Length: 76
Image 1 (cartoon, helix red, strand yellow):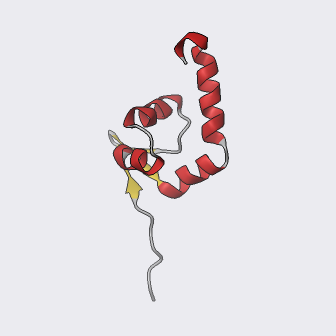
Image 2 (cartoon, rainbow, N blue to C red; image 1 turned 90 degrees about the vertical axis):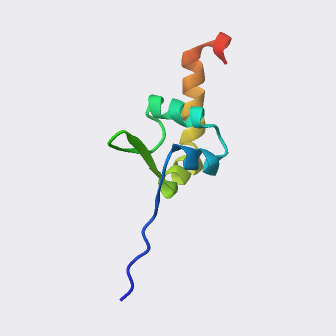
């Protein structure tokens, strides 16, 4: 019997490259608690399938819109 393939965990740098955004953007999303993530000790880890579902669902765009509204017009 073959084992089912398990999904690898990615760190901040790898997930930022996967999404085509900066590491700072990922850290901002972590602060907002909007990106699906798991903390293991001091490290943040991400499942690509969870992050991709979050993006495809439109939650990433919705969360960004809410964040920009909180900042106000001067900080956009």
